[in-house]
Amino acid sequence: MAINPKKHEMPTQEPQVRSHNFDEVALGYTEEIAIAEAQRCLNCKNQPCVKGCPVNINIPDFIAKIKDGDFEGAYGVISKSSSLSAVCGRVCPQETQCESKCTLGIKFEPVGIGRLERFVADWHNENAAEAPGKPQSNGHKIAVVGSGPSGLTCAGDLAKKGYKVTVFEALHTAGGVLVYGIPEFRLPKSIVAKEVDTLKALGVDIEPNVVIGKTLTVDELFDMGYEAVFVGSGAGLPNFMGIPGESLKGVYSANEFLTRSNLMKSYLKNPETPIMKGGKVAVVGGGNVAMDAARTALRLGAEKVYIVYRRSMEELPARKEEVEHAIEEGIEFRLLNNPIEILGYDNPDDKFDPKNGFVTGMKCIKMELGEPDEKGRRRPIPVEGSEFVLSVDTVIISIGTSPNPLIKNTTEGLEVNSRGGIIVNEDGLTSREAVYAGGDAVTGAATVISAMGAGKMAAIAIDEYLSSK
Image (cartoon, rainbow, N blue to C red; front, side):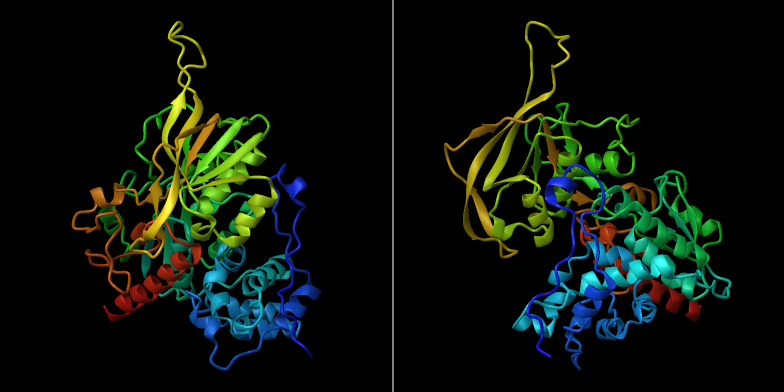
């Protein structure tokens, strides 16, 4: 049978419909489409796709199960390596990881590995009758700081080995960046809640509203009887540009804007959490978070949304699929533009004018690309005399985040690098004995799957450490 050169399309909501709701954009494969896509897999002996997966899922094996119609068997293969398959199938950049290594992709489009992973996880969540069994306790207690992808992965892997794991979460809902940072239309909260419930069934305790470094310190966790601590507190400290006008009303970090919408439900008709709705919105940045913020602003009623990015489309770091969805929804990309000032309303005749201090526009300068920088991307250079003003009511800054210094400042002997990331060795061990770390708290903002890989690696190291004591 001839191989289909293209991966099967993902069914989606129509752009003109989805741009006005927060329902999930991608609708998922049917059983028939999933089996047809699985049949494109060559089942390579050397399994290059596995090497491209940060958590080393046995991809050919789970796809072979799909071919046979054994969807629960496929889930069993995936769950040996991943505790968050329904999440990864939706938000991981497979095109630069497992799918980039796919042999079929040399000549044709690679197998839709991420779409198949999502299908399997969704099928399991809809059809599995039994919760996973709780492993027999080994008598050891572990504390995990943060319930994002790194922390949840570490907690799940240790719980499967019989450890009593408690996850301490600063916010009121478990999930970390999965619930506060990724919009409902890309990752429904019910999916994350289901994954968290699976961990609870394994015996993991979730303690919300506990800020480690404030409510409790790392040292106090050891005093409470925990024998090791994993820090997966993420990178929730937003970066700003340092340009005039960033303190005006209507300027948000993407972190704040998405948290208000996603977790604090300001997308509701009469929300308790305020957020700017409507008007013209500029999102500064070109990553996945910028796409999420722009598409959220559109769904909140913005009449016009701009992505302002200082390089060209070729250098844009966001996933290709997210960029395509944004363009389909009518978001305008202002490429090779860089903000130099945010402008605000000021009525000199009436200091009590309610419009005073609100954003009215953003002054930008045009850029051109020069020689590649140390990362290989062409360096943007300002074009002299090309300044112009973009008329907007809201500005969302999405140029990255850094780890919060709270844990570092309250944990004696914990070393960090110049960017605030916790310094670890190859096993995730920090400069403090029995304190491990991983994910964005170490690397700064990165991908969900890389954070999961760090959590998995640390779980192995913690198990080895306590087993040797």
